Image (tube, rainbow, N blue to C red):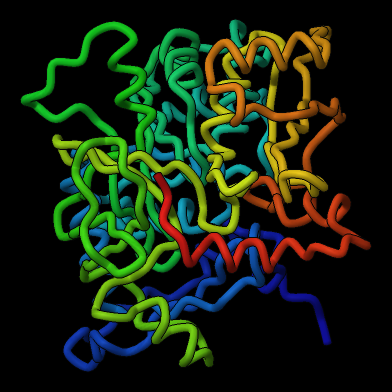
Length: 407
């Protein structure tokens, strides 16, 4: 068979020029029919297929336009693969507004900067480790980043330190967003409400929070009996959500679907506080809460404290077995290039910011942390090394702590 140039999948422009425009008749599309099937990241458990309907997708696009104040003709750099919720969610609302998509084959700080300059990029969405890489890239001064207006952090918890560094170094607004594959994905954003008066460091703290519900979404924080916890910014419970963007269920997993959607609310598995202004702050995933001697310790709280150290590039805090306490926190640290730090130094640094009983009992310096294709740290892979051959099985500890409440 002779070669046909326009059939070559590597020739993207040729494929586009040879394509025939098609306009679907939406009257014949059932809005409740399955439109997309995406899989969860699998950082703490096996991935599950999330069923999203046409209604989920188009209403979420509209709600995100309102939440982000998205403008016509926006230019978005896709730094995250489109199989990830934080990536494909953009495709819907940006296309709706006639925006321009700028793609990158793989994340590389210098290539990101080059595309921002040459394509006039307005915004991008990053997981925190990507933002850290951009801030610490020594070549950033070689590029004109003046068109960049906004960076949204998601996929993992961000620290106020990182939000401040992004704004100061890259010269654009930076805030956090929150969502799940199960919610199409965005549920909350941490921009400052018009009535708020954040100043100085308080603004960075606020913009690093999990945020408040976007239009079209309802969020609550509840105890193990699904009763609302006080809106005091201190009491921890599980985030549950109700919205038009909430999934139909998990692919071929009716029991898991029924459990996640019980009572008409999506149970996210994220533990958080809710303050009187309606801002959420995730403290950890249920499965990542460390239970040491009966006390619940947030690995995210520890990671944020450690990341404030000037020598630390990234960190993961995990539970490791302990004969006396059952399990204790351990920090796995990646240092910045040419930076130095010692275990006693980091222990003391952590204790100056967090209650002593919460702080990691040990620090281990590593060259890198295992991650998914979207930059999320694979905590389950990190834990496996320390729990192999133990009489106490970590999943049992997880199940036990899920039945209790956090204080």
